[in-house]
Image (cartoon, rainbow, N blue to C red):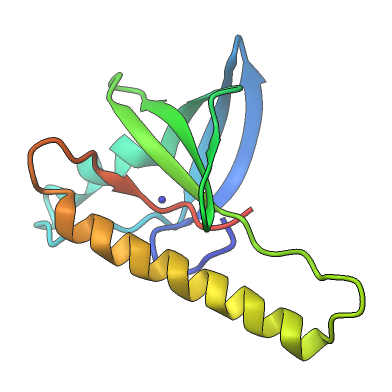
Length: 130
C-alpha cells in the first residue's frame, strides 16, 4: 500500500492540506486480477490518498494511518518502518534485521490480500516503507 518495489508502489510525494497530507503512490499494482478495462479505474482509487495527520498507530512492522481516496472511501494505509542501525551493530546484522522486517511486512500483506475480499476487511494499499 514507497521504496518497496513490485508489491504495490512507491511513495512519490506528499504535502500538507488542512489537517490532511496528500500522498501519491507511484508504481501501484492491483493485488487482484482485473480485466484490462477495469484496471485503470481501480488503480486510480489508490494512487492519490488524503492521510489524516496525527492519526497514525504504530504496530510491529510499521505504522497504520487513516486515509481517504478521492471518492471518499476510508482506507488503512500501512507504512513499513525499517529498523535503525544500533550502536555497535555490524552492517550484516543490521541488513538481516532489515530483511526480516521486510519479510514480515510482505507476509502480513499477503494475509491482508487473502482477507480483503471478505466483508468487514478494508482494501489493502501497499505503499511500502518510509
